[in-house]
Length: 343
Image (cartoon, rainbow, N blue to C red):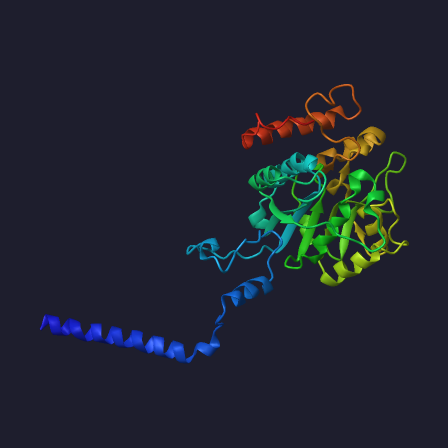
C-alpha cells in the first residue's frame, strides 16, 4: 500500500512537467527566439550598455569565447545621485584616489543614495593606464571610460595644456539615470558632508570664483558644480562649444559653462569650493572660513612629492594638511611602498 500511495504523486509530477513544456511551446511567441547565432550578437549590441561596462570580445562562431553566465548575480538598483570627478591624464590618478578616500571618510554613500563615478580617458597621450584604473577602483570609483568629445571648428590643441581635455566633462550631462550629479575636480580634498549639494534646486549651481585681486567673482568656478543631467542639454552644449560667442579658442570648460549657463546658475557657499588662492591673497577670509570648509581646492599649487612645499613656501600649511591625509590614505590601502607621499 505504501508503494501505491507514493505512485500517485509521482505520476502527477510527471504530468505537470509535460503540461508545462507543452504550454511553453505553444506560447513561444511571447518570448524572444534566436534562429541564427549571429542574431544574438545583434541583439546584444543593440542593447544599451552603461559606459562603465567593458565590452566582451565574443565570437559567436567560436563557443569557447563565450563566457560562462554567473548564476548568483544580484541586481543592484542605480543610486539616485552620482558624485563624480575626472582623470584625463595619468598624473592626476593619485589626486582622484585622495578625493575618493576623503569623500568616503566624511560621507556615507549608502545613506546619501549616491555612488562615486570617475570619467577617464584611456586613449592618446598621457592617458590613464590599466594600473591606474585598478588603483582608482580599489578606492571606490566606478570607472566611466569615454572617448574625447569632438566639436566642429574647435582645435583642442589650442586649449591650454592642463585644461585640454576638460570639455569631456560635458559627457556627465548625458548620464540621465541619475537625478543629480555633483562634479568635483580631482585636485581637491573633502573634509565634511556634501549632502546639501545633492539637494540643490535648479539646473546648475557653483561657488563664485576667487582671484588674487577679486574675492568674489560674478562667475563660478567649475571645479565644484552640482547639476541636473539632461540629454537635451548635453546635445545643445556639444553644438554650443562651436559657437565663438560661447567658447574662445584657448578656453576649456569653465569659461564655456559660465557663458552657456549665464543668468541660469545660482551660487553655492564658499565652503564647497574653498579655493587655495585665498590662503595667500585673502588670508583673513581663509582663516575665518576654514572651520566650515567642506571641499578644499588646490588650484594655484598642486600637491607634489614630499618636500615640494614645506614651511617657508606660500601654501605650506595646506600642503602639510594634504600630506597628512595622503599618508593616511597610503597606509589604509597599503600603497606606502608603491606611491609617493604628496604635499
